[in-house]
Amino acid sequence: MAAATLRHRITTSLILLLSLIAFASYHKGTGSTAWLQWTTIVIFLTFALVFDKAFTNSSNFMFDPDADNWRRKTEALGQ
Image (cartoon, rainbow, N blue to C red; front, top):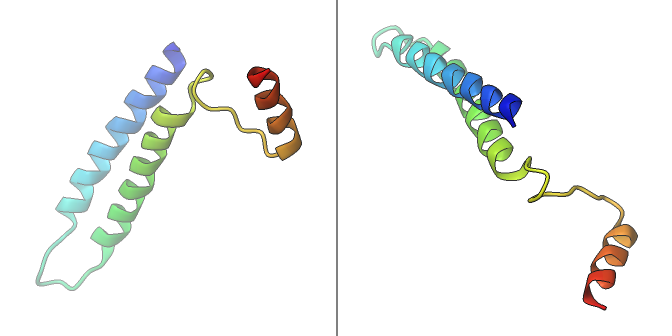
């Protein structure tokens, strides 16, 4: 759990730092699109953080791509 907390703090710090860089690189008169590239990275990191916090707890989310395995697990709980 401590590793996940550290990972969340690092990701949040990166989001804040890159947000500042994105805002600092925007200037209306230059026509530069560097701010858009920094903002895209911030958006990717934000979605990664949301996904990480929402779905990577071992008790909340279990990825099992085989439908037969999932069906056997859920039918066993219903009986």
